[in-house]
Length: 173
Image (cartoon, rainbow, N blue to C red):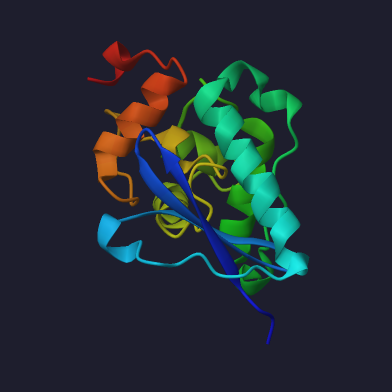
């Protein structure tokens, strides 16, 4: 079994825990303050680079969003999700197609994924997204508003991220 390492990133919306193994990032999630105790683990060198790349990406995202397309996204280890083919397909498509400041509805994502009747399945893919913020599920909206967000602080975090990306929030009410 591979060693899993974790590190933390303090952002304007809370503290993210970034976990990785030698093959890439395993998860990026907002965590509660209670979970952050004395957690600084010694990272094996095989995971260190992935975590450092992810923390650098997050720093650019939160401090100078205009440069985010110039920095390489961290390597995401999706191997444990191979059985979730539709989720992986949707996640890959979102990474390639949905950039900061852009939004799509669940139905639009389903159509782009080749299955126009799969809006609910897209919602489930967004809910199970282990790569919060890098995998841009916060940019996927319901057809009549902002929709849900399964990360810590829910819609409050989603709204902040969308405003940070200069999405016109007036049209979402």
